[in-house]
Image (cartoon, rainbow, N blue to C red; front, side):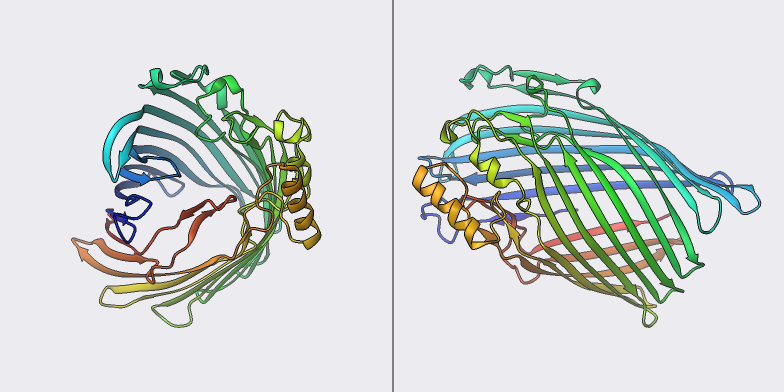
Length: 462
């Protein structure tokens, strides 16, 4: 898949020195299925992604900066699927598999003036490997009680090399870093059950699962900080309603607790530590309707809420005189950058002659962009007073991003060649070229979302 993106200001003579960038991306994937017998199937897959992109930006400095990335991502995996009768109506279904991912990055940065290179300021090489083993099993004991259990083990290794370490004035040991499985390995369990309350019509499910997040990519190789992965626990319960091929509806409630969140402290220092816990909860709804042949209608709606449950009260930030006022005020607030609502709708169509397509709408609702979730005037006024009167360095207290709407369209054509279907597809994302923020942050920092983009792909299944 090829995705050229070019961002340029209206005039090359403006104050941003013709900031912008370009990106080229190619993706390949191969899947092979093999059925050993009616009980056992094997799936093997592989994929590749190659990206070259450059960005020119002037962040209030005398010179512009060019950032140049060359990224190669590759992965292979295989899994064995079981569906074995044991006794009477009792059956065992399961999956056992292995995955390997490789992520190689070459990064360079230069001082520039109006996109003309001056001095090189950075040159780094990174290789990151992930090995994963996983298993999940489902035992059909009774239609009202079918337990499931699963586990996944992830092991990481990698190397980091700073080719321009001599330009770095810090004393931190970051010239060459190597991480091994003992640094960030993680085992994630899962347990639950489902119940077919009404056969082929109503199903209930509930599960508890564990996961993790690695520290920010800027710190993964800084093992001297001894950062632990952020622990995640998810609790979910849901109902699924289905009626033949005409209707599928699912509603689920969830709660996600995080522990060992990673924060930069003091802000701007480049030093991070594990600190704080959060809770997120909400309700997700999905529906699929097939009113007539060749037409499918999809819809989604999600309501989300969140809370910062624990923070660090004491620190070494000189702006807070060893008491972290910002963290104290953050406790009990909403987590920043989590939309309150998300919704979407899509119509997909096909035809007997192979033509098909779809039109989709996505809505992302408002979200707080500060760390204090200032939903009340009293809280906002207190924060502004403390910030202005005592120069505590707190973030903008009344910033909230209103959200955005995006529209996409696609066109497909399927042709059968020697009994193998080949699908040609054209996608246009953000067809109205809506300006939106992929990241809305405090201090007026915004990351522009994708503009109108065109994608072409060819898929063959045999």
